Image (tube, rainbow, N blue to C red; front, top):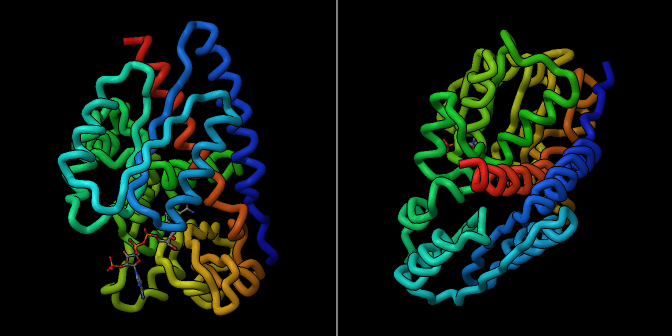
Length: 284
Ligand code: NDP
């Protein structure tokens, strides 16, 4: 079998058009969605991510505000900036680009963002609401994966989903979102014994490990849906996923490539969450 490619770039472009239309409608009611991004320090990757988020805001007609803080900013100063943004009615989404310097308590920072403006979906209140199936900001990468599956016409109910990776931002929440959609979910991680025994059971296999070409064809069931979250650099410095794409695509039914798979969906769902926050700010 040769897998059908799930084109994340195309699906993201379609979603972005829908978001842009909704932004226009909201603007006609006098509200322009606004996203504030706080960047602490000079991490190159973070700077690129932040730039891409600002560009997406511009393209979709949203306002973006970039707040740059120096590497040695105090925790109090950062918290006080977040407090100010929590109270600013022109800002509907607040995001602190991670990682932040070690001297600042990441948990405290995340918890200081108003859950009503937590468009990353990292606040414990949003995580709890997601767990219990209530209205919440869903974390962007897991949400993007859900949309990729739905837009590709892949049914989730009753499917066995195996997630390799259990981080708070990808692995855990993606399993939870698919459980909410009636999948049967297995989580694997670095302490899992006989990983292949589990991955070969997957109707939908999600790789969120952070190791280049980690999942091989022998670990995948014939015809499975394979979602590759990984963003790694190989020996030549080329962007590659957690899945050995060439061999796995010969066996899988569907597969996401890297790049142009999950990646473009993450920022798209961030834009969606900012729009949602702005819409809810006038419907309350
Ligand atoms: P983390 O490093 O936080 O988590 C990696 C997970 O993989 C951990 O749960 C770890 O297990 C597990 N793991 C590590 N080694 C093994 C192994 N040998 N066997 C089984 N499981 C293993 O990574 P993230 O979740 O943040 O990111 C995962 C990947 O996704 C990265 O490549 C990252 O760059 C990418 N990413 C892509 C995004 C996108 O927009 N496309 C967004 C976010 C991330 P344990 O918990 O036991 O340590």
